[in-house]
Length: 309
Image 1 (tube, helix red, strand yellow):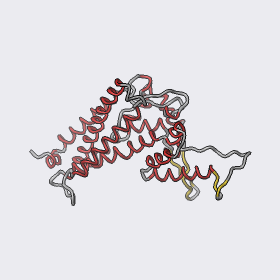
Image 2 (cartoon, one colour):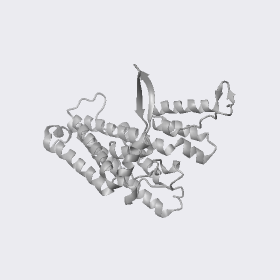
Image 3 (cartoon, helix red, strand yellow):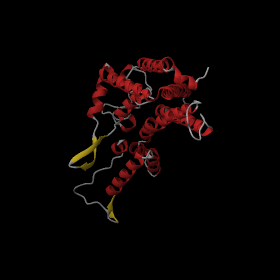
Image 4 (cartoon, one colour):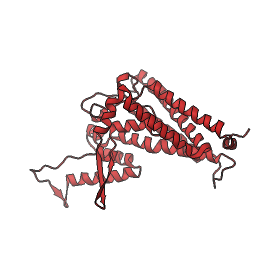
């Protein structure tokens, strides 16, 4: 749905007939490309398809606007890369337990370990590239800032994934309780924090729905994820990462907007944050402490299998 919302095409003119080649007009071809891209995005190939299309665009500015590689990569990072990294870490930790039964696997083998490391590095580079300026090679201060930010982001994501995977390996389905509690906490903060009330309203007013098909006379629709909603999901979706408001008044990312200059995803200024960084990090620390305490105090029997005395 994110692809369908961002890959648009001009509507044909009602006065001038379109030139058709083999029965297809230029608008028909773009409509087909849009649907093919949506199918690729459903199979986690949206970024690759967008990059392929971008290679054939002659205008650089139009390429950045239409293909929206940054946005598609952020979608894949939040919903695929980091989520799969958490699942792989859970498999590795679970199979490290001598009492577990994992046919053909014993703990973290080289392939699994390399996959986890690559996912963490890929996620870190995605968030870093969102804030990296074009002149980073000549701007030494900005380069140092981004280097330190990359290290912070890598440690943040790694610690969160490790804590959730460890808790899930010991306590099983109880991990979903903390996932739901975290998501609800983020939603409440977005709704009632003074700085986020306007953004909260923008999440719903700018969101559209996409009609998929009809069944027994009922229209089946899904919500289309817009830019500001995607940032909210970055805060709420596990492993959850801190981001600031990089959208304009209409809820669009700065690279697709004509109303606002470049905005940072890691900005700490009060007018540009959804949830203040100290508040967000405090919430994450409390959740991690509760998970580890619950695992080691209330379920010592399962913990002994992973950490024998």
